[in-house]
Image (spheres, rainbow, N blue to C red):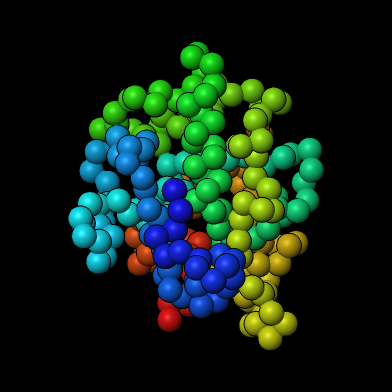
Length: 215
């Protein structure tokens, strides 16, 4: 999985121009075959301008809503990425892909079934939640553990930013990845804090999870 708008200039995912071109809820290209193609009813979109318009694009918020609980923070090191503000930081699609790939390689009694079909987004999300409960949080594969290389900031907080904005994203007052992690370290509640499972137009506080600037 990767963003449908590539980083051709190598500027990095936090580049302001690249963020604007990808939009508030970036589209992610899902290869075929893939776990998400086994989920019924997902709002796949075709690649614009493709000779064969096969629907392979999904909003990042949907990927995040389903696979977010598969990602964990290192509770033995409550600094760094664990302290990053949740509402101004996104996880790269490649991290979700790495965790998903590893889930298929676990022992048969633990692994996520790579051949299973899901009747709905909720069914897929529930299967991921059940899978994480079978993992030993004390012996996690690195593919599941969030690092600073797996995230990027969508809204840098500057000294000139309004005071409420700075307070919201301050390392001492913000909602952080570590703050929403379960006792086992998994981001169990990331699905709930995702922006309406794919809608970039949702209302209320949770819409801060997506980019505030829509220009």
